[in-house]
Amino acid sequence: MEKLVHKEALKTTTMFLCDSTIEAYFENYLTSEVKLLKEKLRGIGTLAGLKLFIKSDKDSIDKIITLLGISNEKFKRVVSWIRLNQGYTFESEWSNSKLRTELISNPSMMEEYCELFSSGYVSPKFSAIIPQFILYDFRIDNNTIERLNNDDYIRNLIKDKVTTNYNSKYRDLYQKKLDEKILKIVSGFGLEYKKMDIPGFLNKQLNLISFEGKQIIINSSFYLTTSSKQTEYYKDTIRPIVQDAKANKNTKVVNILDGAGWIARNADFKKVYRDCDFFLNLKTIDSLKIIIQEFFNIN
Image 1: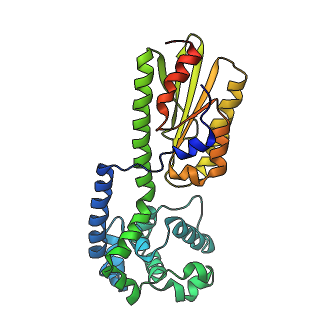
Image 2: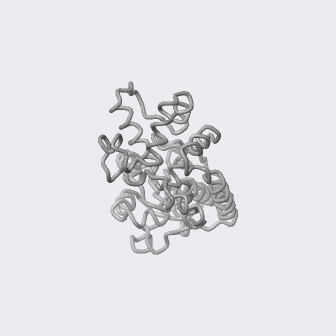
């Protein structure tokens, strides 16, 4: 069997999956979180209300930075910046829950961070150590509170926080669909089939089909959005496997890519496409039957 041509590989890519259960789950989650966030944050317009909220809600820090539109990574950097500039012993960054614990146990620190949240953008204390560009969003004023009346605004803020989880759900669904198809094909030939963990990639495995001293290695990946992990996937997984396989005539490599994220990372897509004996995707996976028959010489 000839390798699927690059043009057809792109043309037959499954860009997105749509699952009613996943969509319903996130729709219900967003609806309930919008309502909850609006109710919880109503009183933070005063310092007393802000302190009470931090003390009473275990996820208060997450909710505050969500309302302010500040990414979790940026917020962690700011917290670390403040700690270093004030002479705190620094071994690692604090999680938001750790910061909350520290605020509750230290009244002076609580005052300090409530000032950061409510008026950090005009506070000389913070502008002396943090660039204004970064401080700009640290404000709780009438405009901030007014955002709580805009469900779409709140929804989009929350949506940004759950995008990774949303993508993971679809990645898992894709892998389940693909594995079911591969298992059905392999079982039809009665071949040995197993999955192996890929070092450095959590919850990622490759498929191995064996018969009489020969083997077919199947790598698969699905990305809805782009990630630096895609380049790492090629360098750390695909390239080493292919280099080993080239020295072994009894091994063939099948690479499988799907998802809009792979189309967007065209350079990485081309490398993964290039470095394999055969290239397939969810829509062309039935061709694995022919690969098995020809390579293992079975009917």
